[in-house]
Length: 253
Image 1 (cartoon, one colour):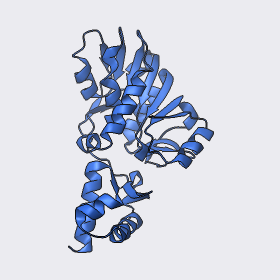
Image 2: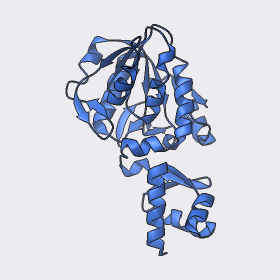
Image 3: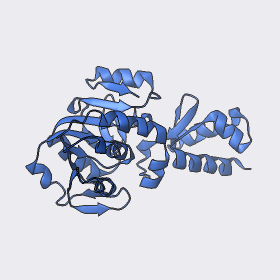
């Protein structure tokens, strides 16, 4: 196998899984770990991935937005843990905002445990899921459909946000970085997240560890605009420390 073919396969694995480890790639591609490390170095210099301890993740700085089904297939167990923990912060009778994204969707899966909850969301898949629970009141923002993420964005999607003040908003992000704050790869969705911040009393970030330490295209807010970040226990300790020093508490699950 030529190096170019092998590197293409590495990117395909990353695109499907979101993260890869050197040892697993070496076994799968039948080459040495030294060869895989060289491949990863080349791909990182091209801006296609970011090296991590023992492996690599996709590089959000590239501006590439993965389709929902690919995001859904990556970090599945981590997102389930994040979603479960986040749902424990909901109280009966709350009005909550649900952002779009695969991690926030895991929060949506557990809302049925609470009574008399009103959900405001721009995520069509979350609304469709929650319609199966009559005790949950669902309000969809309206707006233009982005099929890539099953999301509703401007124009008109923000009109309802001007008329409500939610108890808590669960918001996702493509990048959470100590100096640049919270960012997103898609500008219209970033604008919706800004609206969610303004329309809620508490803001909770939910994101897997691959988003930590990265900066995406569109600014969402400062670290101090949020009250808590829930992420998985694979997050780099130094990044977690810097984020906490920047004023955002972090909970690892």
